[in-house]
Amino acid sequence: MRIQTDEARCEGHGLCADVAPEVYDLDDDAVVVLRHEVLPENLGAKAEAGARACPVAALRVIA
Ligand code: SF4
Image 1 (cartoon, rainbow, N blue to C red):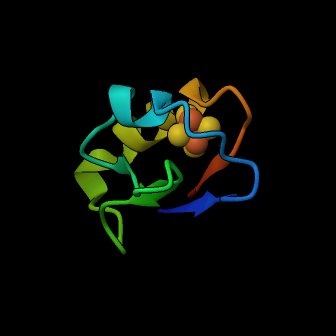
Image 2 (cartoon, helix red, strand yellow):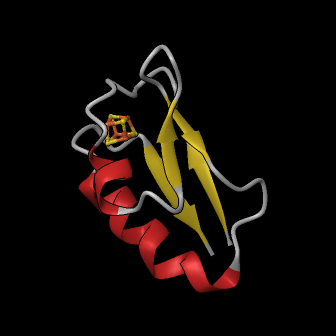
């Protein structure tokens, strides 16, 4: 399972990081960054919840 991020689309609202702080963070420019290069198995549901929270669909979790 991995996460595809579309940094160009990200508007830095931070909802993903609010919902799943274990998975998502924002950099100094308020663009989403992933906390893990390889997503740990146990964070799959969190990753999906964070992706669903994104208002501009900048995150995609790929099984
Ligand atoms: S919720 Fe979407 S727009 Fe907001 S920081 Fe996360 S990826 Fe970016």
